Image (cartoon, rainbow, N blue to C red; front, side, top):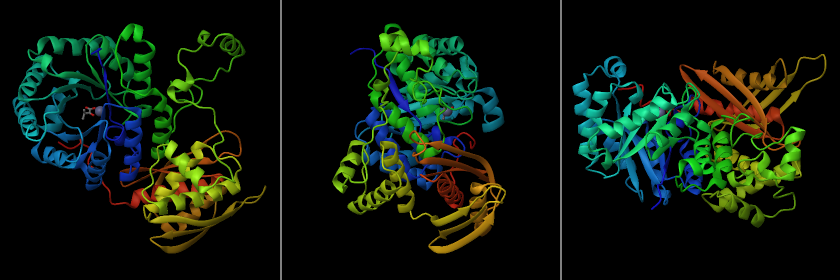
Length: 514
Ligand code: KIV
Ligand code: ZN
């Protein structure tokens, strides 16, 4: 078989560690289904021991996903590993990913353990995980800042215990391509049983080099697995972006000479879904998935592209899933056409009742705007999922008034656990007035970290997608709302952020707790 590169997606675990990006079980399931359509080899669905919510999400994903291996992260202790194994029980193919820090700094300051204790714990963890599966990944956390001799000892020992994948973590994005590539190569050369494991790269983007480091780990180091996230989502500056490494390997096959199992036409739908669910929008000039990635603005380039496409294009937009904004449905479309489009978009509704509720929303939207695009349908499904989720706060109606020379005012009716609340307030602008009206009743006192508006398709008819990021008591949450009226979208986004803030779902960050 040709030399295959394994794509390990960690959007649902490392991506979710990004402040504000936490997802509900149903949102995770929607993303997992899309990752399966993208044909990623491994889906890291979460960290089972971090919360009951994460455990349940992994369990549900393990039961649904058939073609990708489903993986859970676990710290190197029996409790975490047993929890991961339990969550993965129903999977067709599963993997336990266990890790412990190996750099002097992390061992001394974070773990307060000696190198010998860390070595012992790593061995015991892999030995214990072997009771549940023979597909075990081991990561030396902060591997790129670890001492080489010690790292070699640990990796040799865990491979002897049965680890089948070794993931060289550049946890803090400290690596530079040549050195990181050499590190992977040296480890493979010096660890005597290195041929018994697949070598993997896991890079963070603190210096903007995660993709370059990952590719160097593959090309110079001989790694055959890349860990990455959709849109490069992740803590701080994020992780290696899946779309970038995949398209680099594919477009420069002449150089890398590697096979991939990925269906690249699913990249843009995956990017849009992750950005819509997490509220982390994609910058327009982002490689592959940014709105301008295939826009030839300059006259010279347009001329070239019209004469011969490859003068200025190294990839084809349609190969990564860009389609012209197609009007897919309209006011006269019936329930069957709507249902069929849901199926084509890979959206599975839990029941006919859910289809009916989404169809009713579609009809409402079609009354407001005549052309309905795929993006609108995705937004309807997200809104519907929020409503179905029995949200604590839910918008009923709102009115706002703004006039030149007058201070804007708003009147908002919303429910809090089924009880109707009415808020009236003024503000600097209509959006501010609406959020003040909600806050006058809820009195969350949360700090607003971000407010952003995007048009989900093009033109002023488009629905507005608003993201609001709130912080309170050390917790950061993102709320997303869509509506043709951006003031209503803002109210929905604010209420969605409050729902997350008030949910009890606290999660452990695996790397902050020894
Ligand atoms: O960055 C990191 O070190 C991790 C490990 C848990 C693999 O995400
Ligand atoms: Zn990481």
